[in-house]
Figure 1 (cartoon, rainbow, N blue to C red):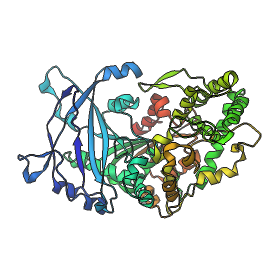
Figure 2: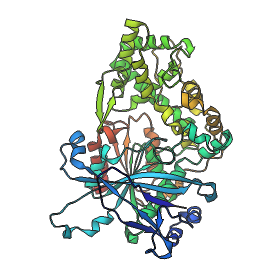
Figure 3: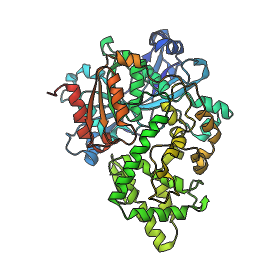
Figure 4: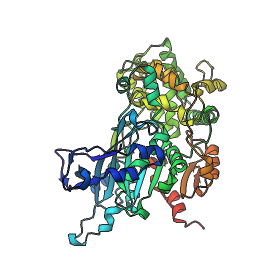
Length: 538
């Protein structure tokens, strides 16, 4: 069963309206393979039946919110020409398990964005613009929702190229049936919850995407029903899964720092990534050598009474091993400075005012003056590590590398190969990177409630395939990928191997950008990738 509803919001400036009809017969014809086809046999009426629609087709009312493009650009990219941005909010209902439609449904949420033209003569409005090609944006993660399009720098670049943009909260995130300890508790006992979590990987996400594509393009001419996809980080992993499973739905794919390793288990991934994290630690201490002793002082305080010395406001503990996880920032532009404390107290990022981290310098200063960390500093550290708010990330992160094998807490096991990260090594304290550990389900308050479920998921050894290398080898969908040589999260060599195994994949390789270039170096990375697409390279 698939349903689409464009939300009926109140107390907002509205224009537009109307009726969008989806017939059960058409939905049956939209089947995504046999599994999704079976799940789309029935469409429930969401708001009301419209007697003017034949066969009791579901009449879906919608309203559209308009936001000023100029106001958004004023805060982020004042060099763009002013215009109008229309945001539409969508809800969809899809099977939780496409192989078992009777297992229940999930509600998905997405926002679309398009330019709005206001010609002097409204009769000259071009009807063709009502069916602009779609670009689907897939967020990094796993377990993170999308920003609203008006808050993202890439939106203008996409719309200026003639697309309309869809930003999807992937299942389990944002407004898409979000996963938390409390919502999981509604599903049943611990084993039932663990089994439920198995439905939130990339293979299910791309089935959602394909169902949504078929809904949004139902009235398009057949030759225009394919859409383009764009993935950042884990979103790029999802793009590769999409290319493996449903290439017939794709017009083109853009991948930014997200060509995945085509592996069966995570061990060899972490063997490479730990080495890159070591390099970033060396860069950090080379830039801020005085932080070698500062970080040691902070760690000594946090270890004074074991892992429970300092309590955070959420009822978890700021242990030394949790403090080490601040290295997660090292792979971003400005990440070294953020951990040290060189950023301003507040910074405007994509039109959002956020608190600067300012951690090591601030914490060291407080220890020298007061002998303890203040609430403000503890809160800054806690906010820099949002694992409690995105539990999918911690529980399912290692499973994104699993095909037919168990992760068994791979990052925790592989870490033993690198004594540099041992807090008792005697050398500088090395921060860790994008790794999850079983002890996080002791130190983080929300994760603590899910320890049993996480251990059950880590032991799953029958994960289905995420990639079809034979299909990638005969791929006919144009693929354009940005690959960062110094990427701390997606190994460069693995990414290039995947590019070579994907027929027709063109690669923009750079050592001048880090993993978050879509946010921090958007103009440069878009220019490089779209140059590949426009085929203007000599």
